[in-house]
Image (cartoon, rainbow, N blue to C red; front, side, top):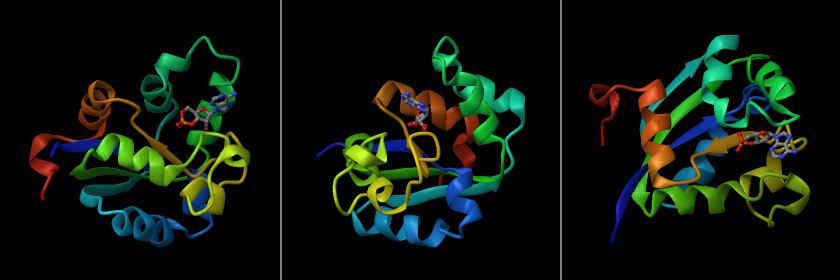
Length: 140
Ligand code: CMP
């Protein structure tokens, strides 16, 4: 049994449509536990830094613009194999390819406005969690 932590972001398209509770409900139903959570308005600089791995990609500029278009909820989720489990609950990046019952299938509007972000590896989870949270904010 591997207990992991992962970073989740509820994106502006979802916060604007009042979907925070519905999304948290799906995460919790899967067995993931929210051990930290805050609603914030990202600055352009923060969004650019967070997504710097994509800075050469053609969608980078629009992605940053979208991520500052409204508040986001950043969360730390904990549970058994939390990184993979969260990505399963989220569904594929493109909602057209997401499986039935996943967050993106149910709520995402488009490839860009895809409602949630989740860390894609244990190493990235560690980095992404420390981008937004200090250890003292993680309470399980
Ligand atoms: P996310 O998991 O937050 O990681 C990067 C984001 O870029 C991704 O979700 C999508 O919302 C967004 N994005 C926009 N266009 C693309 C694309 N063509 N391929 C992958 N991600 C994209």
